[in-house]
Amino acid sequence: MEPTPEKVDIFDTTLRDGEQSPGASMNTEQKLRVARQLATLGVDIIEAGFPIASPGDFEAVSRIAAEVDGPQIAGLARARAQDIERAWEAVRGSARPRIHTFLATSDLHLEHKLKMSRAEALARAVEMVALAASFTDNVEFSPEDAARSNVDYLCEVVEAVIEAGARVVNIPDTVGYTTPEEFHKLIRTLKERVPNIEDATISVHCHNDLGLAVANSLAAVRAGARQVECTINGLGERAGNASLEEVVMALRTRHDVLPFTTDIRTEQIYRTSRLVAEMSGMMVQANKAIVGANAFAHEAGIHQDGILKHAATYEIMTPESIGLPKSDIVLGKHSGRHAFADKVAKVGHDLDETHLEDACSRFIALCDKKKYVFDEDVEAVVNEIVHRPSDYYVLHFVETHAGSELHPRATVRVAVEGEEREATAEGDGPVDAALRAIKEAVGTDTVLEAYVVKAITGGTDAQGEVTVKIAEPHPPDQMPARVISGQGANTDIIIASANAYVNALNRMESWKRHRAHAPSPTRPLGTTP
Ligand code: KIV
Ligand code: ZN
Image (cartoon, rainbow, N blue to C red; front, side, top):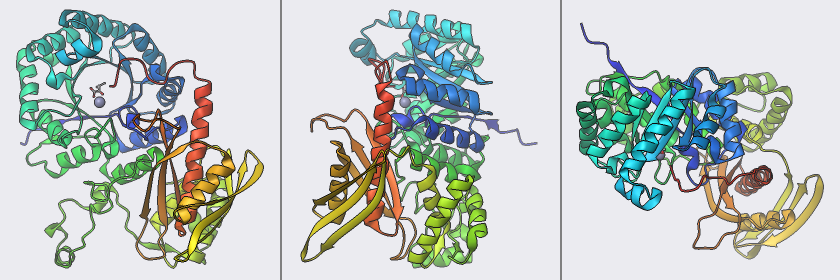
C-alpha cells in the first residue's frame, strides 16, 4: 500500500507581510473580506496583522479573530513584552489563536539593527517565547534573517525556543537571498542537529528578491518543513513572498516528485486572487503563474490547435482546477433583473437590495455601450459598488475636450461631503486634465504615484479597468509614508480613470481620519518584518 502523503500546513500572511507592500494597505472591512475568503480557500493559519503597529491593525486582527471561523488566527509580535501582550489581546477572541513572535539572529541584524550580542538575543527570545506560552500553547517563533545566520547559533536558538514552549519554528529567508540547495541543507541540518526538533513543526517563510521564493519553499518541504508561509498573488515586502497559489499548485501538479498534500480548495484560488487584487489595489501581472490573465491563454495557432485536440498538449493543469471562470457571454439588456441577480450570485457576491438595484442600473447602462457582457464585466460592476469606501467625494459629472487639434481640457462636478463643486483644468491628455480638474475641485495636495489601465475582456468595446495610486506630498528622494490605491471600470477610459481617482481620494480621506484618531505611530520602531 502507498504511504499516506504528508500534509503541509498553509500559513497565509497576505494580511500581514502582504499588506506591508507599498500601496497594498487595506482597511478593516477589506481585510475581513479577504480573511473570510482565505477561510473558504482552506488555509490552515491566517496571519491577520501586526496588532501593536497601529490601532487600525489591532482592530482588524481582533475582528478577524472574533468573526472568522476555521483557520487558526495569528498575530505578529516583536520579541517584546508589550508586543506580545497586545498580540494576545487581539487574537484571544479566536477559537484557535496563535502568537507569532520574532527576533533577528543574523550577526548583521544583531550588530547593526538590534545592537545586541548573540547571548542577549538568545536570552530575549527564550524569555519572550515563555511569556507568549503563558497565554497560549500555540506559539510560533521566527529567527528573522535565519538564512543568513550562523548555523551553530541558529541551532542553539531553535533548541532553546522549543524548550521554552514554541510549537512552530519558522525559518525565514527574510531578504530572499538563499537558493534551493542551500535552503534544503539548512532545514536538514536543523532536523539533524536540534535534539528536540520533533517537538515543533518546522515552517519556512521565503521572500522573492531573486525570484526563488517558491523554489526555496518547496526545497524546504522536501527537507522536512511542514508549514509554508506564503501570500496570495505573492504580495509582500519588496519583491514579495512565496506565492500561495504557486506553492499549492506545484504540490498538486507535481505530486509525483513532491508527495505532499494541503487542505487548500484549489477551485477557490482564482476568486481569492481576484479579491486580493481588488482589495489591495495590487494588480496581477498578465504572465503571473497560475492566476495571471495569460496563465491559461493560448495565443499561438499551433498551441490552440493542440489544445483543441487534447488539452494536455499545452496545459499541465486545468483552468477549472483553480476555479477560472469561462468567459461566457452572459447577459444582454433584455435579460432582466432576475437573471442579473442570478449571475451576481453565481460570480460569488451577495448583495443587499439597494446594492443590487444600483448594480442592475449600472449593468443596464453598460449593456447600452457594450455588445457582449461577460462574467468579468458583471464582477467589475459589482466591485465598483461593493468596494466603494465611505463617500466623502462623489463624482457627478465629467466632460472632456480632446483631439489632435485641441488642447485637452476637462470639466468635472464633484460633491465634497454634500457640497457641489465644479472645476476645469487642462492637461497633457484628457485623463490628465480630468484628474487635475478633480484635484482642484476637491482641493487635495495628494500626488499621483502610479496609473495603470487594462482591458477587462477583449474587443474595442471592452471595459477598461484603471488602478491609480496616490500619496501625500513627499520629497522626491523619499518614499511616501502611505500609498493608497483606487480602482474604476468603465467602457470610457476617462470615466474609469476619474472613478479610480475619486475612489483613491475617498480611501485616502478615510485613512487620514482613522490616523487622526490613532494614538501611536503606524509602525513600531526598528523593525521591518
Ligand atoms: O521576512 C521575515 O523575516 C518576516 C518575519 C517576521 C517572519 O516577515
Ligand atoms: Zn517576511
